[in-house]
Length: 211
Image 1 (cartoon, one colour):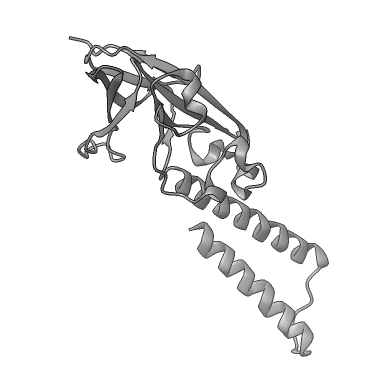
Image 2 (spheres, rainbow, N blue to C red):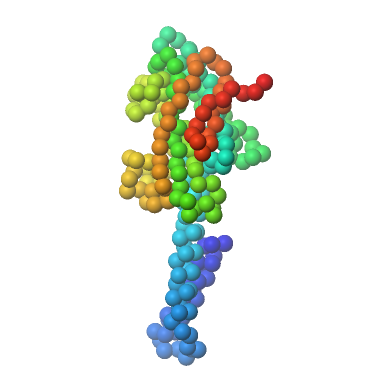
């Protein structure tokens, strides 16, 4: 809808510019009319672009609207000094089936997940929730989450780096929409029991499933 309106306004402005350029007879309009059209066109393009950018972000992130379940986690020892993390994310569609579990086998005695929280600029609230979240790294200890060695595995992204908010991408265009990005690590007991990783405006937390 926004894109169609932007194209329509661009066509109207272009038509008036061509008529003026080639001296085609026209009904004179006050300059304020064209200023208003240009401002409306610029605002429409900005909102449409932001809407597309947020939709692209949602390919890698989940919207946090109040409380949002990011994943079900299970951590268990599989050998001395090695643990396996099983991570199951919910379907992006309310009526859909959960995605198949992701399994990561890493060195260490306990599991740690690193959760990235992205706060979008407050002006984007007309497009929906202004906080996004995703599990960025699965590791065996907090110190290993900064790297991707034997003690940490960085989850695959769909978007390229310039569409990924973060401190390592300060000049990425997507950061024009981002107010703040922070990363929080949580330890998951290696007892094989399921835990829900829940995100909220106050930050992520682990919860035991209710019986």
